[in-house]
Image (spheres, rainbow, N blue to C red):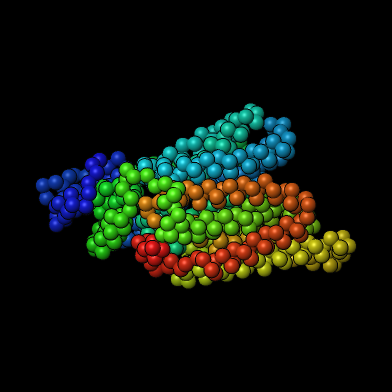
Length: 496
C-alpha cells in the first residue's frame, strides 16, 4: 500500500473509477484497460450498496457487534454470580474482584485505544480488540479456579476498552451528517442489547456455556470487517488519498458526487499535524483542543458518576430492599427498558438534536433519582406490610425504571456521539484515549463503591446520584454545543 499526498492523488482523477476490496483495504481501479474480472464479480453486489444509507447502515451494523460484546461482558456477572461462586468455591469478595476486573482491563484498553486506532486504523483496531475478547471468554469457560477466571475477565476488559473508543469514532467518521446522530446512538443501543441478551440467556444457560456464547460477537466481527471500508478520514490523515476517495465513494454510493465532501476533508487534514509529529499533552492546552476535550471528558465522567452501573449491577438487591420479589425478572425488564429507550433515541436523535435530548435525559434522571431517594427515606419509617410500605415499594420501582429510561434516551448514548464529533482528527487518538480512560475509571469507582454506599443508606446513595445528575444538567446547558446537521469539519472549526 503506497502513501500519497494531495498532488499525487490528482493524477488520473478524471478517469471513471470504482472501489475494489483487497486484503481488507479499498483501492481504486480505472475502467478500460485496468478493469479486472474481480470488478465484474463485484458488480452484482454494487447495487446492494449503491445507496449511501444502505452502505453506511451495513457498516454500522457490522461494527455494532463490538458494543454488543461490551454489553455481554458488562452483564455477565449478574446472572452467573451464584453458580460461579458455588462451582469454583469462591468467596463473595473474590467474585466481586472478578466483576470489577473488566473495568480494570478496560482502563488499560482505553489508554492504548487511541494509539492503536491511529496507527493501524479503525478496522485494524477492532480486529486487535476482538482477539483478547475471544481468549478471555475461553479462559472463563474452561476455568478451574479463580486465576483463569480473573485472567479471562482482564482480557475481556482490555478488548472492550479498545472497542468503546473505536466503534463510535468509526461510525462518526463514515456517517453522512444527516445520519450521524442516529447511527452514533447505535453504539449504546448495541451495548443495551448485549446486556439484555446475557440477562435473558443467563436464566436458562449455565455460566460456562454462557461464556462460550460470549465468543460469538467477536467471532463474527473479525471476518465481517474484511468486507467494509476503512474510515475515509483516517485514510486521508495517513496520506492514502486514492484509498480515501475510494472508501468515501463506496460509503456515499457509486453514483454520488463526493467532490464537496472530499475537499472539506482534505482542508481539515491539511491543517492537522502530520503523521510523524507526535501530539503532546501540552498541545491540549490550546483552546481549539482544550474545550472539546473538556466537554468530552465531562460528559463521559458524568455519564458514569450518575450511578448507572451501580444501580444496574445491584438492581436485584435494590429491589429486594424495596420489598419486591422476582428480582431476576425485574432486572430483565430493566434491560428491555434500556433497549427500547435507546432505540427511540437512535430514531429521533438526528431530528431533534443532541442538546435537547441531553437536557430531557438529565432532567428526567434528576427527578427520578430524587423520587427514589425520598421513597427509601420514607420507607424506613413506614411499618412493614402496611399499605404505605407497598405504595412506596411501587414508587421505588417506578423511579428506578424512570431513571434507566431517562439515562438511555440521552446520557447513555450521546456522550460517545459528541466525543467522536467534536475532537479534531489530529488529537482524536490521544484525547479520545484520555476521555475513554476517564469514563472507565469513573465506572470502576462507582461499581466498587456502590455496595458500600447502599449498605450505608439506600436513600442517601440515590441522593448523591441525584446531585450528580443535576450537575450534569447544568453542565449540558452551559457547555455542550449542538452538533446536529453540521459536518465534522464545521464542528471542529467552531472551537478555533
